[in-house]
View 1 (tube, rainbow, N blue to C red):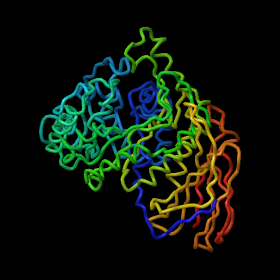
View 2: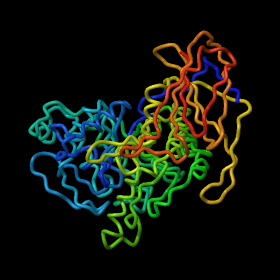
View 3: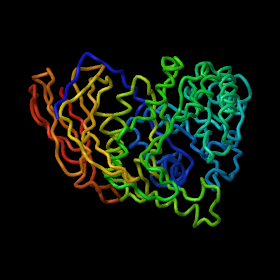
View 4: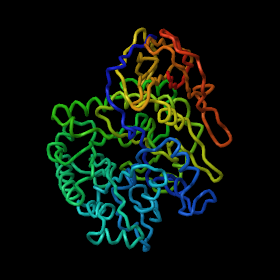
Amino acid sequence: MKLHTNLNRVIGIRSQMLYGHFIEHFHRQIYGGVYDPGSPLADEDGFRTDVIEAMKKIKVPILRWPGGCFVSSYHWKAAVGKERQPFFDKAWRVEDPNTFGTDEYIRLCRKIGCEPYICTNAGTGTAEEMSDWVEYCNLREEGRYARWRIANGYEEPHKVRYWSIGNENYGYWEIGAKPSGEWGRLVKESAKMIKHVDPTTELSAAALTDIHWNLELLEESGDFLDWISIHEYWDGIHQTNDYADYEQVMAYTHDIGHSIREVRGLLEALKLEKKIRIAFDEWNLRGWYHPNVHTVRQGITKEEYLYPRDKNDDNTEYTMADAVFTACFLNELNRNCDIVGMANFAPIVNTRGCIFTHSEGIVLRSTYHVFDLYVNYLGDVVLDTWSEEMPTLEVTSKKGEKLVIDALDLVVTKWSDRPGIALAVVNKDPDRTHSITLPLEVSGSRVMKYTVRGNSIESYNDVDHEEVRIEKTEPGMYEEGMEIMLEAHSINVIQIV
């Protein structure tokens, strides 16, 4: 394939928040994940130091919390201060000890060095409860909630800039789901109260790729919003845990950015694209496995609804399929960086996360190395790019549909703070090596290639088993027309510096 790019034609400056993450009170994401006071690997505050170091390595820019579906029956006031009582989490049907609350979350963000992003309870909660939360976090000393924070040992405000009104309140599965008209009015009143507390906050609200829902939301509350929040899990196996295989996953990469395109079109039609940006603040290839919970008929025994969640911990299932898909979606986010300003991989720890914890350490799953590659080796200025002679791949989707897709997915970037070019090139082909020809006028520069791949499409990482990692090669000095080989099922960042 022959690549063309215009080094002077910039699509946009990619926000670092495109590489954000998410964590929820589900299974072992919080307790036994990031927060495990009983572990010898935890620090004096109960946080797993190995997890924090792994998160710092991929420079987590923003961390969304506490949900997710969990938040729609979560009342934050019960989880601050010394007097805390466990409560029954009606979303996931487990008892939460309430030992990890707002202050612990802020402390975690400070240890990581990331921005906090709090999702509020718009299910069973109220506009006043949401704005009280902002008071607690952001006011210096005015009012009882700021004074409560001070009494809890936090003299300085937490300064939480990013807030989301609700989670997936459009969905029947969400506690406190709302019809579109009611949702738009609740968002407006909540946003008004929050902005009265702290006008510097940036607000998002739950949305989806539905014209009616979004019109009601934006016409009612668009003046108050900075972001519109959308979610997507392509392999929706919440009830079955029936993983799509590699070929089926590649089929998901066909039109991978449809949600972005549809929401962009609506924002442009309403002339809001300069004011409101897209926060793709919950995404992953595969839905989390939690059978008999988001269903009309609930599981009765824990064997039906609770214990099966342990199957999310099977590291052998997080293969090169997950890595290649993740890279393709990160490419799509970069290509749309003019309208998408934030994205949050869901979750970062355990479940379908890129970091897995066990009693003696952590496992960095295949997707972790993709984030490492993009965060640490790719540029932030996204350039206009086109190609000739794109190789193709025939695949069959999970629904049995035959598709012809591009075998390669690529983005070209440069840096805003130093010279050089960096290309992200994904070879989706499971078996064949492909090449890319680079007709760029930057001769005299050194070429380095950083590659994430495994020996096969089924390669995975587990305890004492590492097949997927970043490998570095140096093809030599760059010459115009240079050909770079791309191994099968690989993710590559090619630097010309």
